[in-house]
Structure formats: structure tokens, C-alpha cells
Length: 348
Ligand code: FCA
Image 1: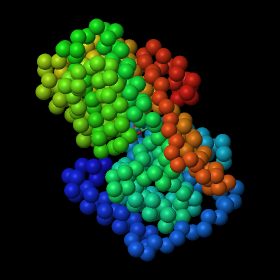
Image 2 (image 1 turned 135 degrees about the vertical axis):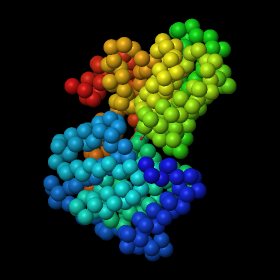
Image 3 (image 1 turned 120 degrees about the vertical axis):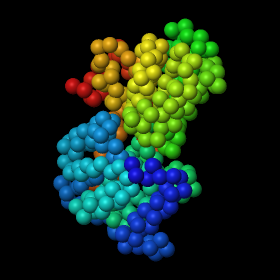
Image 4 (image 1 turned 90 degrees about the horizontal axis):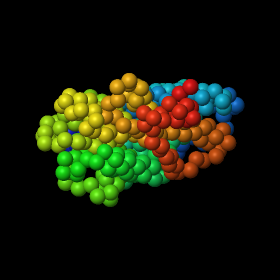
């Protein structure tokens, strides 16, 4: 990601420029917005839908695409998939969709503050828009509630992680004085912050001392970014014997697990729980258990198939999707992951 690596002040300038660029390249100035072209029902079979994701290398997004592909096959539309890791790529991809005759797109944006620029660009090109996973943020820092969105019940899912960690600690009989929490955070992204805040609040509600909860802010949401953040924190806390680990997603927690291993902390002295459930399958399949205990499996089918279907119905029949749809998560562990993944259609 280009923008997130810039200092905050430079980022907002860059985002402002992108917003202007979106408006200018869409052929309208900020004070002179042209109306979107009137919607005409496309001929059957002529429906083209874009699906843009921020991290195409992450299994979660590959699965969203797989399910969206299935919707395209079932319903008979064309799906155009694009990986867009920064603002320039997103805007170019929207141009490309318009040039290719698409009528709408689903997007997980690489930066939620690109929201206004994406909305302006989609509107000018007459494209319908549905945000998935990461909700757009307006210039006031608030979620753009008028943009259609499907995402997870982030706080609740985070709370389940915290409750499970507290239960595992109790089951193992670890004293609080020798245990600490490692929370892999990415507070720039609202859904990520809600997840880790939920986990931390649930641990505190279960009686875990707040002053033994440590946040490791990730610079990037991939495994290397998490490994770096976790290693920095663990180096500062050599006195802790047992660790409970939560985070934004599987990759964040996997980075922490690798950092624990790097610090020679035995696998049985830590319990780590991820979110996604799709990016930790290799980890759960390892013959020798690591400290990665399990993950809250999200519904890639809902996020991929259902969003694509919502967009299709909107274009074809004028059925507008709900403004805000939330999905749930279910805990998978080494004991049940094969069966649950099969039931959910993630694995054959
Ligand atoms: C965010 C995360 C993804 C996934 C998704 C539902 O976009 O980065 O890993 O958890 O929400």
C-alpha cells in the first residue's frame, strides 16, 4: 500500500489530491457535479460487474472472488476481478470498468478514506457501488452510511475471541500475574479497531487486568507487518510467561505466533486466536500444534456470492440492497476446522 506508509499529514494531502483527481478525470469539478447517466436496464447476459479487492494475495479475498465467480456462473453475468492495493490503482480500475461496459462494482478499498473519491468517480461513470468488508469513511471521519455496505459484526466477533481466550486461560490454570495479552492492532481501519477493542473489552469483563493487555500496532496488515510489530513488543516484555493473542485477522495473529516462536516461547505457553478462518488452514493442518489455537471463521460466501448477487439484482431488477448488512463468525479449532470448512463450502 502506498498511502498508508506516508506520515498522517502527507496522507491526507495525498487523499485530497486523489479525490480531486477522481472528480477531474470524471469530467466534473468539485462545484459542478454532473448527474449520473440515467439507468437503463441492460440486455440479459450483458451485465458486467467489477469486484475490486485491496489484498488479492490474501486467501480471504481469493475466496471472496471464488464465491463471486460462482454467482456469476449461476446468474449468468460477467465478473471482472481486479486487485487494487492503492488509490491510483482503484481509480484506474473504475475507469477500466466503465470503459468495459460494467454497470456496477463491489469493492474492498485499500484505504477507507478514499471513500468520497470512489463515490464521486462511480457516480460520474454511472456505476452502482457496494462496499464490502471495509466501510468507507467520509471527510468528517465518520462511516459513509449512505454507501451500501456488507461487512462483519466486528465488535461481536472480537468479543467472542476475547471470551474464548479468557476461557482457555482458565482451562490451563494460568495465573494472571504471569500472563499477558498481545493485541495485534490496526486502528486506522474501523472494522479492525472494533475487532480488537471487542476482544480487549471481553477479556477485561472476564476479569483480566487491563494493565497486562499490550497493543502491538501493525504498520501493514500482512504477516511481515505483524511479525515486526509483535517482535518489538515481545522484546520489551521478557518477563511474561504466558501469552494470549488476538488481532484484526489471521495474518496479524500468525505474525504474532511467528514472533513468539522467534523469542523461543513454547507453543504450549501461548493461545492465539485469529479472525477470517481462511488464512490459517495450513497452520491448523500442521502435524505439530503451534500456539495458533483457532480462528473466527467468517462467511466468504456471504461476502463474495451475496454481494455479487445483490449488485446483479440491483442492476437487473432495480432491487436496491440494504444499506448495511452484517455477517457473523464461528470458532474453528484444530478439532473441528475440516468439518466446518466443508460445511461452509470453503473446502471440498
Ligand atoms: C478486512 C480484513 C480482511 C477480512 C475482511 C472481512 O478487510 O483486512 O482480512 O477480515 O475485513
